[in-house]
Structures are given as structure tokens and as C-alpha cells.
Length: 114
Image (cartoon, rainbow, N blue to C red):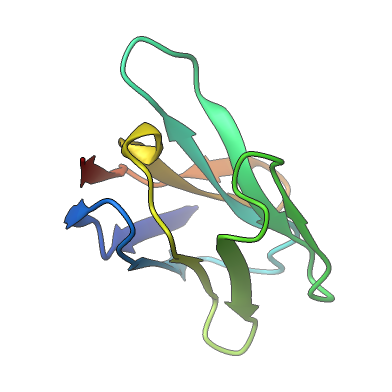
């Protein structure tokens, strides 16, 4: 069983920055893809960015050039640096990790004011 705990959400003005972090704990044999998803008000959960074990990133078009995903395999962490935030980035952000199963964090709220 793997537990994911996110941190770093909050309230920020448009144009500002936030950094989300997620640490995995529990019985971890191997973490494969890790990433971040978000659920905006009234919308379905959507991919923000993922990163493979070897560090190959994939960012959604809506965040390319503004958000950067990274991971530290030794510490079982994945982070999301969010710059130039927009009000439409307001959402609950969820950490994701896959091993033999898929795991999700509890979510952290990011609110961007205009």
C-alpha cells in the first residue's frame, strides 16, 4: 500500500508562483510514472503533468512553458513548479503514482485570484 501526501497549495494572485510537492510512503517496491492531475470547479479531473522513472516529462498544453514537473527517486517525491499562474489554474491538484496499482493523494487546493 502506498500513501501520497501533497503540500504547497494555497492562494496566490495571478502571475504568481506556487510549488506543489508530494511524498510517497508505505510499501514501495517501485514507483513508475508519477504526476499531477487537477479538477477545476465543475470540470472533470484532467492531466497536468506526468514524469517517468527516468525523468521524461509530459506537460498538458495548457501549462506548457509555465509549469515544470520534477521528481526525486531517492526520496520518492514528485514536485510541480507553477509559474505565471492564471485564474483558470484554480483547482484541486492531486498527486498520482503508479506501481502495480494506481494511487492518488487527497488533493491540495490552489486558488489563483485575478
